Image 1 (cartoon, helix red, strand yellow):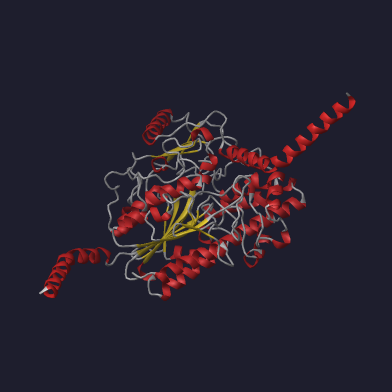
Image 2 (cartoon, helix red, strand yellow):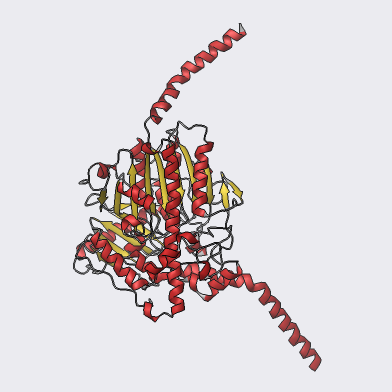
Length: 586
């Protein structure tokens, strides 16, 4: 009797659960796999398909068989971009309004400025779990580093991540004086790096291993691969580097002009667009010594090689998905978190001395390989950002305009789009593609981005209407976009902290300030920006603040702290010596 009762109850339970199981299967069936690839510090024209010098055949093939977007805008710095990418919400609403590395101490912990994803937002991974997706992440996280803010608490089943803003690509080592160490985590636990670690290689190794170890292989998957390439220190296996050195021997002035002309030929900018003026503070290539030129040529070659190495490993992942028969049901989304890194800190004598003390080297005969400490500098960053002005840290187009590729199941092929779009649009587009609501769940901060799917399905349909504007603020640099126009305020040292108005649809280089010619529009956009800033909680940085300056200041303090014990000993010795001499004389 008991056995009959148990079996009867089990049968009832199965029957009762059947609608739920069936609903889950129906929700999952036919859903595309999503692979989101994020490159670090790559400008619009860095991929081969976008006119860059790097050999990126795998990325180029995905672009050729999909859509290329040439008017996508990110934040000018990495963590706010990542927060917006993964949530679809403005960075201030996510808790990552600024980088902790760039935030004055007095502002830490203020609403919106915690530097880690808050609980007011949900990630793409969390939302996709509702559809039974397997969710994986490898690479740079930079959105939290404790048990409450690592990927395991943000919807990811499996993870292997760097929790910091950057690190050595071969060893567990930091890259700035105030970031001398780096930590990786696997599934929420701090781990040592595997043997033969190279960031781009290992992140693909790990993402493939997650598939291999997965028990629920019939579920669709969401893979977020967040590369360190091409964040400083730029490093790449030597075999990917040497062939690029001749390309950059004519220097940054020539590269800047070449990319500008290439952008015209590719139709990325209007034929009558003008190249912006160079910054007066920048050096001319011919004014450098031969040794200095060789240094920068080598760093640029390593940067290009780092992109090629990353592309090579992306190809390994594509091949794996193809072998498993999953590629036809997979959508690839590839983009970058901001424009090229123009920080000058890496080439100062103090920074190089610190790097050498940390075990890095600047041996140009061993370029790119393990221990190499490379960075491109501001002049080459501005050249890489061409045809636009400014670069990372600034809200000029060179800091914001990044490549976007969407390729895969049911998406148009061989299509280029110059429609204005924003980083917060990627999450709701993914939701639209898989059948989720593009609005935030009840109780969470609003999703401020818009789905791009209507535009993907009909190129005549813009993402934003004529009266729909988009605001942006990071580290005291700001912008507001409206119907082909842009007001922008760039912070010091390269900016003047004043608002300017440009028609970026015809003047993407921001060469002609038309604020005085269109005062009504200028005031309308300023007012719209103020409404945006109040709505999301923008906090004004203190007088004299600059993002680059804050990083430099923290680096100097860290260097002084590192040598303080020795200085303290010297001071004590000298003090005791003079006391002894005084006593002898007395």
